[in-house]
Amino acid sequence: MKRYHPLLVSLHWILAALILFSLYTGDNILEEMSNASPEKIFVLKVHMATGLVILALMLFRLIVRLKSQLPKKIDTGNAFINKAGKYSHILLYVLVFLITISGLSTSILADLPNIFATGGALPETFENLPPRIAHGVLTKILFALVILHLSASLYHQFIRKDSLLSRMWFGKS
Ligand code: HEM
Image (cartoon, helix red, strand yellow):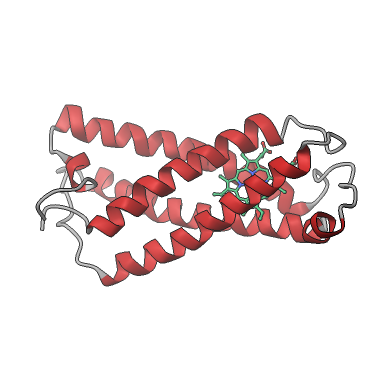
């Protein structure tokens, strides 16, 4: 078995795009926008809907991953790098779950579903809510881990030349 199951490959790249989109829009649009801005509710709706799709697809991917046959683990010849690879992937899953749960908790504490339904005004800020603080910190850690994940794949592809990226692409299994 040389590659991941095509469903796992598709979900990997769809999730990568959705997570990068949420990190970018969360940090560069949502965070910068005042809660008094008339466009904020629309941006929040898009952000929350994307986040919930990410949560559902992550759960689905985890189940498919646990049930499908995986390609053989790559041995870098260095026990520390092998372990770092394994634990950084687990941490990616944990972080994404915690981020979606803290985002959801923020929106429930701020009564957003009710505000969206009744057309009421947003609270002055979300910044004082504990899950909002956690959401901000966790997204910064996720951003750092995404950079590490990307650097590791480039290291495998161009320095170790072990075709790691082809395992996460389509083709003969
Ligand atoms: C992987 C999924 C998600 C990512 C990557 C993400 C990313 C972000 C980022 C980067 C910010 C700005 C943080 C800061 O700079 O302090 C943010 C804010 C926020 N997110 Fe998320 N988010 C995700 C999922 C969710 C979900 C599922 C919800 C709710 C259902 C949600 C609700 C919010 C709310 C209410 C804010 C506060 C906006 C503000 O303070 O103006 N997020 N998110």
